[in-house]
Image 1 (cartoon, one colour):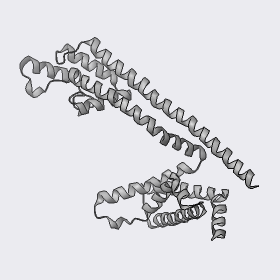
Image 2: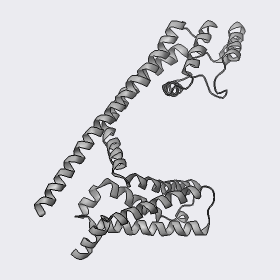
Image 3: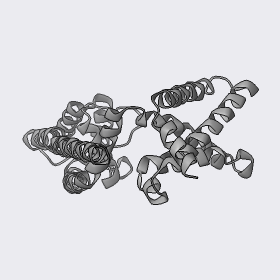
Image 4: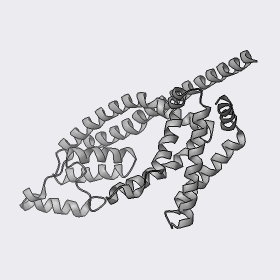
Length: 282
């Protein structure tokens, strides 16, 4: 058994073996893209053979691991094992079309195995995972401001329901819709309710037509449809864009960069520890 384990360890760390697996992952990724255009028996047979190769690979890495615990403590091993096991689930097991579609989508995630083909990419993924905790608190801060601005936006900018209008008010509303129609045409009032207001704020965060929203609100104010003057409208939109696009997003960027530095230092410590262990063994 020790000889098998030793052979598996040599094979798992072999450069040719690693490059071969990378090549197979690339082939698998290309075939997944090809299957969006056409699918035939040959492609399915190749994909099945690739699944068997992935199974052999994960088995070799399992045998080569120092222990079962060390194997499952590596998140990449769990990730690869999950993708391989999903590949063995037969589509005929599900009767509903939605479940079959979900299974096919999960199989497409085998492309993500490319993430472990380079140490630099693995480091970036590690950084993103470690950044989740700090980004969680940034997200809470972000949602607090989103909620605040959404409530203020609904309170100030919600257009009246045309069904409740009549006479001059209805005429002004119809004139306003001709002068400043919603964009796109099938979209509702950007601040008609809290949910739509949150989406509108996210839309402004991306820089998508946020100045058009300002001009539309100024026009609505001129027609007497909302109770806010141009100064208030401008302050609201500009302050939100500056706060969200520059301050809150930069907090996320700062968290990622900080964790990137921490991850690099950890990798260096692990490398030094590994080198010292090898020197001790020698």
